[in-house]
Image (cartoon, rainbow, N blue to C red; front, side, top):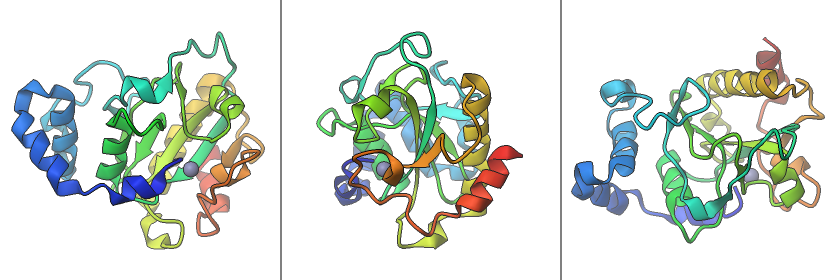
Length: 212
Ligand SMILES: [Zn+2]
């Protein structure tokens, strides 16, 4: 993501407290709470609570509307790339960050390290702000992975497998070739000043999984 450091800085407990206080009135936030509080059975709440996820295996937790552009892809822009990111912060903080109207960043999907849980935050048809290059934003799906580029232990097999299934689905849906010219790291976006996913990301393994 663009402001990875600020995501990392966000303390988790105050936001959790607020979510709990908000209770049912904050339906969206309540869904986020359920994910963190009950990781093994997020299905306590209906997975498709808001009926808006494009990817069937994703939980829908929308980003704030000021953190992306509404689009009508693939009609207005072709979807040609999948951009792989690492959050440089924890899963919950990343979700909160994309829900924060002041952050001005988002991604379509966020994948959790421990179990590969996928959250969708921006519709595929819309333009998430993740690549640091607007032209690439218009033509890509952005996937954030929980972890730190210098700490490969975050890159679990569960996360690789789950993310690869997601990327494979995106490729099949939008006709994106399953190769490294079209499935790229944030660091490979022209003009990018970010290093994610970094040298610890196992591209060979990931691409094998994507290709099935
Ligand atoms: Zn990134």
